[in-house]
Length: 252
Image (cartoon, rainbow, N blue to C red):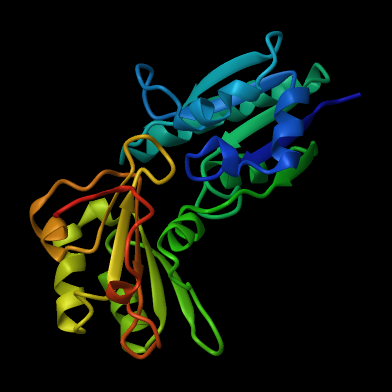
């Protein structure tokens, strides 16, 4: 019998935020694929789940290059898909780790589509997103009542973010490191410079949070950062929340 691909959302960084189902699947896996961007990099997702991996499980670090060259990208992705197919043909159960949730802006989505199109079985296990974790750390509601919530990856799409702010939605901004100064400008334009929180490396030892707009303007922002913006048309403001559960706060 052919094997099955299982995509597992491992959450934002804290191993205790893994679901029981995710842990069970990881413990049962014959092969675990841990995506990396370069050969010399450790896999953040793998580090999150390492305490649950069995000794006889095969760990395969798979490279997904973060480059703009489409030819290089397509070649790498096709090679990775073929490698997974080989394992599935041998009847192996293959777990593919992905940060956050498996269905939100994840590398796994594209792998899953290719594997499904090739006729193999696929199962996806949800995980806690970074923005849900940050909201809970800060005791900030993402949405309540009739409030709207927009989730926007901030890369060459300032117009999309501005439209969401103009409509009065609460907003989650992913990948703010692409242009933090532009994000700061939009916050000031709409009077929201005191209505946001940014968390970097959520759930990890290096986690930092800030509500200081100067950090967006003047500091280098880690790639694994998330911003939550509470719109002025919403009832709550981030500055009214209080302490940050003892986590390190930038800009203070």
